Each structure stands twice: as C-alpha cells, then as structure tokens.
Image (tube, rainbow, N blue to C red; front, side):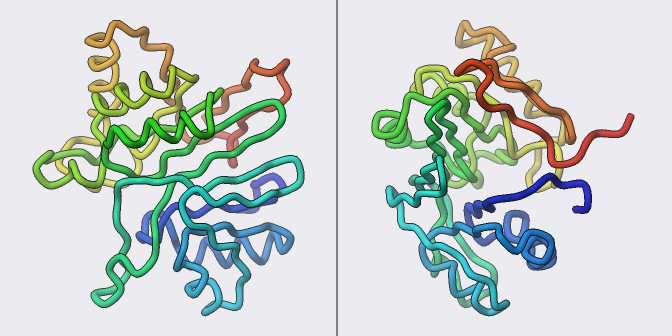
Length: 227
C-alpha cells in the first residue's frame, strides 16, 4: 500500500470478498483522502457504514472526473456478502473515456452476446481487460465467469482492442489450476486464428506502456515487482 502512486479514483465492480475488502478500502481512504470511490447501484450503503463517501451508478450511467468520464456497464454476475443480501446490490464492468484513450474493464462476468453492446455504445476501445480464469467446472461457473474461449469471442466482438487478461493466477476459486487459464487462452487464440501477442498477460507488478494516442497514457503497476 505504501508504494502506491497517487490514487484519484477507486472503481469497485461488485461486493464479493475478493473484489471488496474492508481493510484495503479503509487503508486506501486513509492514504488517499481525495480519492473518489465509484460503485454499482446499491453498494453505497456499505461505504456509509464505514463513514466513507461513494458515487453510486446504475448500468449505463456515467460520472465525470476531470478529463475522464466513467461509465458503469452491464455484466453477467451476481452479488452477495452474507446469507441475507444476495443480489441486493448491483455488479458491473467499467468503461473509462479519456480524450486520448478508451478503456474497458469487464469485471467478473459470464459470457453473453449482449456484452457486445458495450463496444457498440461506448467503443471503440484502445484497451480491454477481459477475464480468463475461475471457469471450471463449466456447468457451475458458466453463468458467472467466462472461460478463455469466451473471452476471445468477446474480444473479437469488441473489434479486437489491445487486451489484458485478468481474473486468474491469484485466488484458487475454481477447479482449474492457477496456471491453466493462460495456456487455454493461447489455445483459444490459435483456434481463432489470432496471434498470442494480441492478449498481453501481466505478472504482478509488471507494466505495459501504451503507444496509442501518441503515448498520451500508460498503464503502470501499483507496486514494482521485485526480482
């Protein structure tokens, strides 16, 4: 946490514990009191409980933040933190518009052909962060998590922006091994006639500088990786 650069905004996709951690949120709020928390519909109440301010958005709603505009986008998922609050708050992806770049973060989501509407309404995107992990077994996970083949399908429906695979390699949430998703991603890309470099998997702490829009923006890691 102490190695983070200045944080202007924190976007929360949904309330599952691997995406919304109370200790982390409070530490962020203390270290970066100016940071804006932006959350899906129904989740502001959780932040109020800890005396934290948050902006709440429904799907397709937007919020201006300086040069940025943040949009909440549909996702195929669910929410729950206790036995009594299932689907009491929304879940979402995020689109960030900057004059020089458009970025799409899918959040946790199962595949749906309707996700292509996000690109039609808010694209074209320069970069998309798409999930590839926690997909096995399919009979159980398909409603909530894409597999690599579906991520590649969505990638093509979004007109093939630069893509960063996410939601893999950290928590053991499903039956596949932690290192299986990128292997399956490479297979899916090959089967689709695409090059492996069209998805850019990053290690924790690794960074990629975006050459788009005359190098106006770059993606940087929160923490530099120590070899």
